[in-house]
Image (tube, one colour):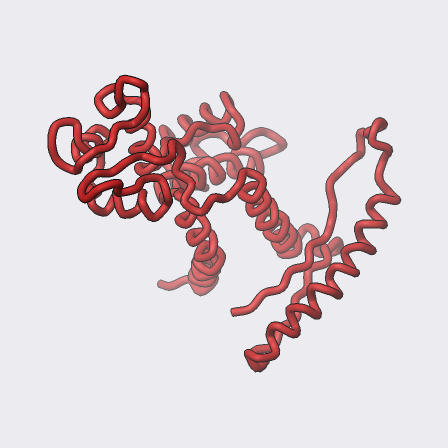
Amino acid sequence: MTNPVRDSLLAACRLFMTPVARFLIRNGITYKEFSETAKAAFVAVASEDYGIRGRRTNISRTAVLTGLTRKEVKRIRDELKSSSSNSREIELNRPAKVLSVWNEDKRFIDTKGFPRTLTIEGLDGFRELLREVGGDVPPGAMLKELIRAGCVEEVAEGHFRCRKRQFNPSGISEFQATRYGECLRDLADTVQWNLDEASKDDKRFEFRVWNDRIPKRRVSRFHEFVRESGSELLEVFDRWLMDNQNPRNAKGDDDTRCGVGVYFFRS
């Protein structure tokens, strides 16, 4: 039997995961890396939020809630205990591994310690480098991606030079990456809070307005209107927050984080 609510939840998941997947792929994050991060998030939430009588959820119940094996749950919980989720060392994706090996393995660097210019075939060539990294990606496909990301250049026909040590195809900064996650978290937390039956008397402000019959030629005008009006509104909110904060050198025990976000969207 089908479960309409479950089907709708999975459909909703695909809705918000599509831009997330686009963002991650654009910035060189693979599904394998994302999967490990998602597992850690599932285990952390199931462990901390679903305990009985104030206790932490045991491994067996966490496994039931997450669909993971008890062995996998224990491994992830041990990793979360030893280091924060933000500092966990997740396995490098394959393009990043290629650059790392190219810059560090003595077979692929010159006498001065710089990465050698490689041909695809031949002794200690690019195909050998890929074999060292592992996986089944053809050399041509990997080189095409590394060239697209600005990490490798073809200096002569069939000769390739490594230009960068890090794989960062979009050039995004650490601040931008962190901001992306914080914006999605804040919106998701608010929507989830409002869906929670226990908090129905304490709803958080969250509304949208839209119209699907706006001529495309008018969208830019509306965007500009939102930019100007939204900025003015946020300045009012920001002024209130500044006027009501604790002094910087006298942080109180009851300090908490709150704010409001305004965003324009179109589809």
